[in-house]
Length: 393
Ligand SMILES: NC(=O)C1=CN([C@@H]2O[C@H](COP(=O)(O)OP(=O)(O)OC[C@H]3O[C@@H](n4cnc5c(N)ncnc54)[C@H](O)[C@@H]3O)[C@@H](O)[C@H]2O)C=CC1
Image (tube, rainbow, N blue to C red; front, side, top):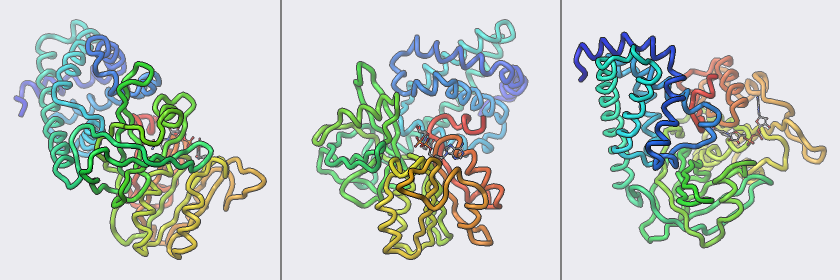
């Protein structure tokens, strides 16, 4: 617990930090990368370049300061951070590097206003937050290690199969190099791939698991991104028999197991976790609307698979929406998704579990539609790959 004087100083300085938050975090990252280059692989440099990562950190620090005496308000946000950190493999000692650079950045931007007392108070507050996160992260590492087929840290896998799912998305099937089996996971969770050297750079990236648990492989399905370091490496260089290091499945964007109708609304490569959810629930008899928006049939992944499931399961109903359809393959609807199209897929009472995933513009539109149609807020689920702030921008 922080002492009263520290809490008062934190609360009194939150407005100043809010005013200069972007300056502080823009200052912070160059300091961190210069003083601790070993942390670079943990940050997606695209998010740095877009400025979304610094904004996300600024918002988190301000929210923490503003709620310093009511930390319970932050439990959802803390859980998201913990999920991201454990996926990446953040370790306790890395908090010291971040804390020291954050305080240096506050001092540099606030100047004389950042007295020794102020810096001291923020150092204590940061220490408290670090301890909360370190404890929560250790508990997840332990759980991952102790579950059957589970592991801590990185584990070597072998690529056993590659399947092209569309002109841009390829599935990669991995089996462990050892013979210790695979853990169960929740549909919607993702794996982290760790590469120590792609053109001299060490990187780690999260990819959604795209099949149900309980198979003798783990599968991800990856879109080739124009400048994607890892996606191009996978598509161009990872061949059958190659070894890849994986971190255990994680993430809290998971399927709620109940009998409510399931709406899976996805755009583009956002389809991947929805396929894991669909495959998990296919045998359950649960009413599933599988709505997928794609540019056209060339880039529409898993179409054959979903169509086959729908043919053999009456409770699964697909709806495809193409924004730029080709003459030779017409979807159920064209253009972007809109409220009336989605409303037709919903029961009158709107009592559904609604999952949405896709590119930023799609997610903004889908969220607005779900809300306008009266779906209860706690039944709308989404995950944003990258700093969440970009979605509300
Ligand atoms: N959870 C996440 O954060 C996800 C992020 N992405 C990111 O988005 C990027 C683009 O993904 P692609 O598969 O190339 O998608 P895409 O650019 O092919 O778009 C797929 C479909 O989304 C719909 N869409 C796009 N913009 C929209 C808008 N403003 N309003 C309504 N609908 C819209 C259109 O129907 C389009 O055909 C990826 O590079 C990936 O990095 C993609 C999926 C999930």
